[in-house]
Amino acid sequence: MKQQDNELKIPEPLRADWFMVLVTIQADLIYNALVVLSSPFFLLYRSYRRAVATVSAAEKAVKRAPSRIAGGAGRVVKRTWFGILGACHVSMVMVLALILAVVIGVGIVSLYVEKPVVVRDRLFFDYTEENPSAVFSFDKKKRSFSVPVGHNVHVSLVLWMPESEINRRIGVFQLKVELLSLKGETIARSSQPCMLRFRSKPIRLARTFVMSVPLIAGIANEAQTMRIDALKHHEKWPRTKAVRATLIPRAQTWTLPQLYEAEIVLNSKPPWTKRMAYNWKWTLCVWTSMYLYVAILTAFLWYFRPVLFPYTSSRFTAESENLEIEVVEEEQEVMERRRRERRNQPRQRSFATTQKSYT
Image (tube, rainbow, N blue to C red; front, side):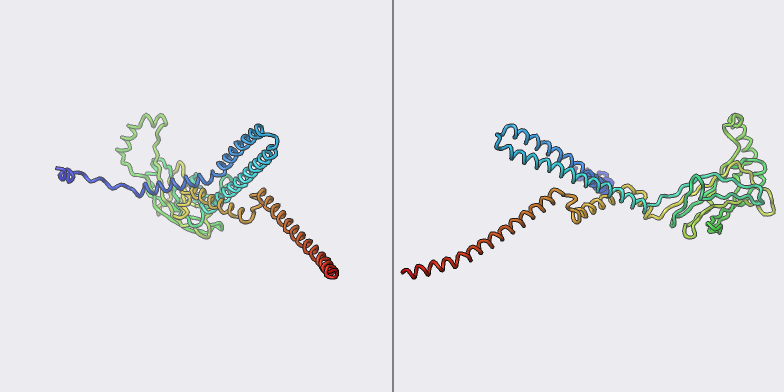
C-alpha cells in the first residue's frame, strides 16, 4: 500500500532555489556593507560608554582609597581621559574618511552612469510654408539636454486630428522626420504614410447617436489620436541637436491635413552595461564607497599614522628619546669608569714598588 501511495503521489514542482540563493547573497552583502559603514559610530559609542564606566569606577576608587593611592588613581583618570580623547579623535578621522569616500564614490558612479533621456513636448507646424514643418531643438532656454553617445534614440509623433470632412477626403499623407546636427546637416531621415482610421457612415451616425449627450456637453469630441513611430537612430558623432518634422500631401494633391495638436516623444536607450549600472546605481555607490573607505583608511595607517594616533606616536617618540638619553648616560658612565680605572693603575703600581722596597 505504501508503495502504491508513493507511486500515486504528484511530483512536487522544482523550486527556484537559485533565485533564493541570489536574494540571500544580495541581502548578506547589503547587510555587511551597512555594518562596515556604521562601524565608526558604534565604535565611538562603545568607547564613550567604556570611558564613562572607567571614569566613574576610578572616581569611586579615589574616594574610597587612602591618600597614598590618590596619585595612582590620578594617573588612571589621566590615562582614561587620554583614551577618551584618542577614541574621539580616531572616530572623527574615520567619520571624515567615510564622508570623503561616500562623496568620491557617488561622484565616480554619477560620472559613469548615464540616465536615459525621456522628453515629451509640443510641436507647432508652420502652415505658411508649402510643406508645413516644425523643428524641435535640444538647446532650449528652460531645459537644454543632449543624447549621450552610444544611446539608441526613438522618435515618435503624436497627432490629434479632427474627424472632419477634409481629413476624411485627404486619406493618406506623408510624414517626414529628420535629425539635424549643430551645423544643420541631416544625420538621419525617415518618411512614412499616415491616415485616419476609416469609419463608415453608418458607424459614424451610430456613434454620434450613442455619444450625443457627451458630445453636446463637451465631454467627448470627434477626433482621433495617431501615434507614429517615426525614427530610430544610434547616436554618434556628429551629435544630434534638433528634430524636424514635415507634412507632405499626397502626390498630385495640395490639401494638407488639419491638426488640433502635435507632440514629439523622444526616448533614448543606453547600452546594456550602462543600463545595468543605472538600475543598480545605489548598490554601486555603496560598494564603491566601501572600497574607497578601506583604501583611505589603509593610506592613513600607512602614511599618516601620527595624524590618526597622535597620543601613541608622541608617547613612542618620548619613549624613544628617553631610551636614547639612557643609552647616552650609560655610555658616559662607562667612559668615566674606564678613566678612573686608568688613573688608579699607576698609583697601584707605585704602591706595589714601595712595598717591595720595604721588604
